[in-house]
Amino acid sequence: MKTLELRLTPRHKFQERDEKYVSLKTSIQDVGNEIQCKVFDVSPCGLGIFISVQNKSYMKNNRTLWITRLQEMSLQHPIHAEVVYIANEVEQRYGKKSRELKVGLKLSGIFPPRIYQDFLKTLGSV
Image (cartoon, rainbow, N blue to C red; front, side, top):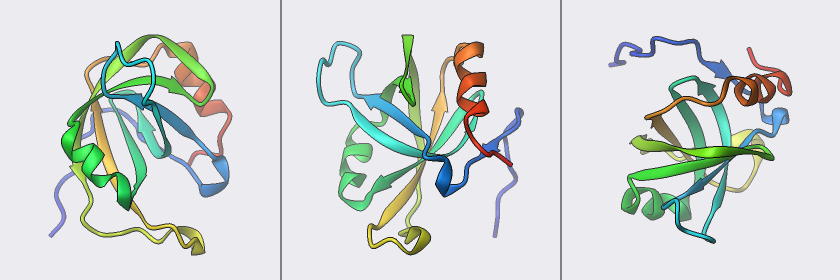
């Protein structure tokens, strides 16, 4: 059984070749420990990312994260994000041997409009 989509804003899906990434931290004060995750979709209010199976416990232990960059574009003010789901199915993407899980993040702020538009421009979103 599928649930109804609760998004109020449009979602932009990315293709594998788009190579879109987001950088996440567990704390604003954290100088290191930033992880980079591949983005499979984005909307003004949320992100869909892939994580490796090995990073599942990282996401479970850190239910709130800070988004610090989209691609190489740093955010002057990091955006707080909450993990709203971690898929139970392992995603074997595009014939690769790496096994990944889908994770949904809900944003408590919005991306700066120019950075968000630049992020969307550089991809072949559908």
